[in-house]
Length: 142
Image 1 (cartoon, one colour):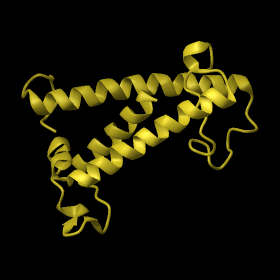
Image 2 (image 1 turned 180 degrees about the vertical axis):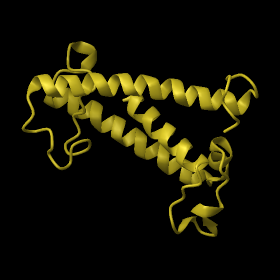
Image 3 (image 1 turned 120 degrees about the vertical axis):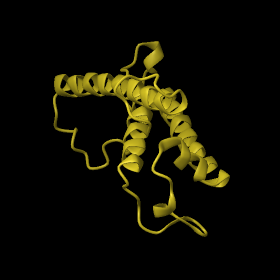
């Protein structure tokens, strides 16, 4: 789960840095295009209620995943499958994985866990490059 969050954070940080913005308004009087192009500055420009919405949404997903794990299967900390999301339709809304073998699904989960770990390192690198100038070799300020 943390890997998925890190992957989304990395892509978001990269997209803002590359100048990619959604059309329209983030909030009343704040356009997406007006957000700064540096990750932490863009986060600081988001109104408090916007940050609260994002964190609440992430918390609801986490809560429901734990709830579904307790009712529909074995929790990953008690021998269940790591990386398997139990919220129906959240990570495979089109059902693309339903005809795949268990081996293929297991390999996909392993790849996703590895990519999530790399994304955590990437987000940490961008964070440190922003907060401690010169701390990450060959990394411009982001």
